Picture (cartoon, rainbow, N blue to C red):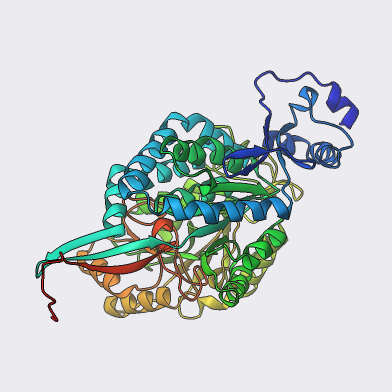
Length: 542
C-alpha cells in the first residue's frame, strides 16, 4: 500500500488522534519538532507504510491531519535540553514548598484523588496502555496494581512508614521519612506509562518528579501526566513545578540529569548491563540510583502441588510474549509430578494465540527481533535440553511464519538442576516466550529442598520467586531459607499484586548493589529520627 493511497483512505470515525506538548511544571509547551505514533493495528497490518508515513511526519515533510487517523494515533512534542533544565529548576523550587505540606494532604488527599481518577478513567487508561502494545488483558492487570497501590490499606501503611511515633519518658520519639527532593524517572520503552505512574507514590512522599517519555511510545506517559498525576496534584493545590514530563532520547536527558545540581534521585528502568553501568555514573555524580532492571524469576512446583493451578500460573511466563520483567522465567519441578505438569502446561499453552492488543483474550505481543530467541533456543537444545513445544515464528493468524511478528510459546525440558545454568536460558533473562522446565534429580526431600533454596539464592537476579506446595513444612522451610528476591509468592499467581506489598524492586542484577523491594515513595525518601520534649522537661540521658 502506497503513502498516496493511505492518505486517500476513508477515515474510521472511531479512531482518535492526540497531541501533547511538553509538560513543563503544569503548562503545555508546544514544539517545533514532533514524534508521531502509529496505531498498533496499523503497524501489524502494514508496518512499512505506517513507518514511512511516520518518518514523513516526523521530518516535517507533511503535517498530521484527519486523513492519517487510520495509521497515526497522535504526536508528542520533542523537548530540547533547555526545556528539560527549566523543568529541573522548577522541580527544585517546588519541592521546598511541597515537602512541608502535611502528610494528610500529600498521602490521604492526593492518593485518594489519584485512586478515584484510576477508577473514573479506567477505559482511557486501558486504551492508552493498548497504544503501547499491551494486550487488553494485561492492561487490566496493570490497572489493578495501580488501584492496590493507592488503596486505603496501602495509604495507611505508607503513612505509618512516613511517620511512626511512640511516647517514652515524657518524650515523643519519632522515626520519619523525608523526601529526597527531585526525582527523575527514565521508564522502559515496553511499559512507559505504568512505570511513570509509580511516580505517584514518590510525589506523595513530598518529592518533585521529572519524567522522560520514550520517543518510541510517548503518548501514554503524556496522557497520564496530564490527566492522572497532574490532575490530582492540581486538586490538592500542589506547586506546579512538582511534575514535568518531556519526550526525548534517553542519553541526552540522562546526561542532563547527571549534570544537574537539582537532581537527587534517578529512577532507571532497563537491562541489567546498561543499568549497572548507569549506577556507577549516578554514584560518581552523587545521585541516588533507583534501579528497576531485569528479572529471571523462578517457580518451584513441589510434588503435592495443585497442578491445574500451577500450570495456569506458569502460563504467565508467556504473557506479553515474555516481554515483562516480573513473570515466570524458569520452573523447578519435583520429579514425581514433572510429566503430569508438563502435559497440563502444554495443553494450556495451546490455548494462547496472537492478535491485536485491543482484542479480548489476547495475551501474546509482537516480538520485534527474533534472533536472540533462536540463539537461546539453539544453545539449550545443543546442551541437551528437549524442545517440548513451540520454537517457531508465527503470523497474526497463528500460522508458522519465519517473518511473522510473533513467536510461538516455547517450552524446553532440562533434566537435572545441578548444572542447569550451563544453559543460557536458565542462567540469564531471556525476554521472549521461552520457558525452561528444570526437573530436579531424585533424592531425599530434605536434600531436595536445600538444593532448591540454594539454587534460588544463587540466581544472579532477584525480582520475584514463587512456590506451589501444600505441605506446610515444605512451605515453612522455603520461606525461611529463600532470601534472594524482592517478592516471594506461595500458591498464587506469580504476577500477583497485593495491598501494602511492593510490586517492584529486587536484589542482584535486578536492583544493583543496594537493590531491594520497596515502594517508590519509600525508596525516594530517607530516614530521620526525632526526639521532642516540652520545654519544662529536664534532660534525661537514658
